[in-house]
Figure 1 (cartoon, one colour):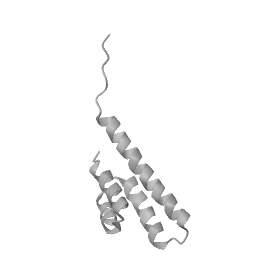
Figure 2: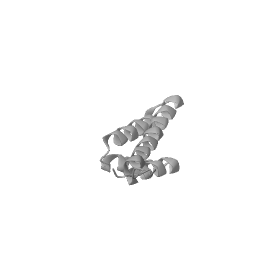
Figure 3: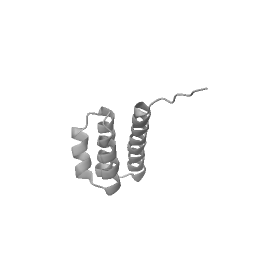
Figure 4: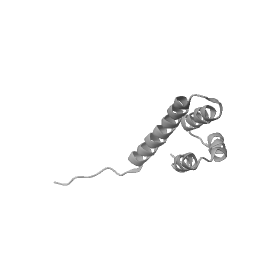
Length: 83
């Protein structure tokens, strides 16, 4: 799992760099990340109801958090307890 895509998505979202976020959406191999970015950018540009934009942003950020958590758990070595 490539965590740099998630780091980039978080950075671009924080800095409001929508052009870079759009490029990341096209280039990433993670289909769910791509779809979350697409939904957020569509809402940001075309939605008049701010609550919808906020909902899409929250969904994107939650997915990024979940994906980074999962990647950390998969790469961490299991603990070995000796008695």
